[in-house]
Amino acid sequence: MKLINSDFQECQDTNNSFANIYNQVIEYLKTTIDDEQLLSQVINNCNHSIVQLTDGNSYTILAHDGTFKKYKYRDSSAAFKTNMAISVKENEISIIPGIALRPNYNKHQVIHELLHVISSNQHNYFNEEGIAYTKTGTRIDYYDKGLNDYNMENNPSSDGLNEGITELLASIITNEYTGNYPGYLAVASLLMSCNNQLLNAYFSSDTSTLESFYNDLEEKQSVISRDDLCKLDSKELDDAQLLKLIVGAIRYNNAYNNTVDMNGITNYLDKFYMLDNGSWNDLILSSLNTYEENDTITSMSR
Image (cartoon, one colour):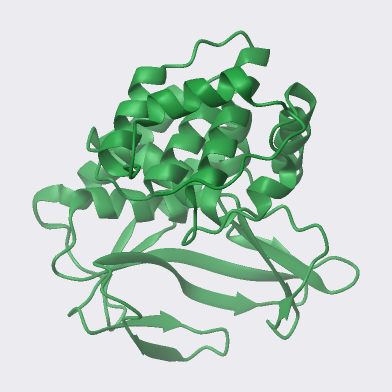
């Protein structure tokens, strides 16, 4: 991990604060990722990442034309992941991902964004049609050689799932549940509790691992499908949609004979994603008892 300022000059890591964050994340992932090749890739991504300390008003990237470009912060976020340096070659889009930090950042935010960084492809190769994809966790975007967006049919990308997994891992590492992305975190927690397929798909550079997870999910239950996750927007989630995802994820666990920590999930949702009436525990138990797999969960008030 390299620390720089907005002029792309290297900075000193005072008090080893970023080195400590790096070590905490990597040590956790060493106990979690059981594929040695994948773990090596993750560590390599982290080693080649950039953290940019800014004045809080703007940040700088090294664009594909070789020039430095300065941008204003897009919102009030204290930290966010960005493509810090981009170059386009004949056969690939090369990206060094990084984190832009405002002075008011906190450790949890850094770890959340660092997970986005180390789950990002750094080498993105063009296929025979001149199309390449970038992959950050379970978010996948396609581009042509002019770096124009390309609408890929059956894109397996899931933006909502990506934020849920990232916030879940950040919360486990920091032991701090902030209430960010609560519904998405609950779904990610359930889908990742019975095996490592989704975790490996999140960090893998290959989209086929995510497709394999979707195939397994649809084989093991029929409440939710690949499309339900691919359409999961990180900024819009309603109660009926969340309930359906939770019921399907619980049945996915049942197929693996994995016992779900219902109290942990429902207490978390009741704290950070409250219903207008009743509790998530009663709602989920009722749905599990009455919901037929081929039906649709209908509207609820919130």
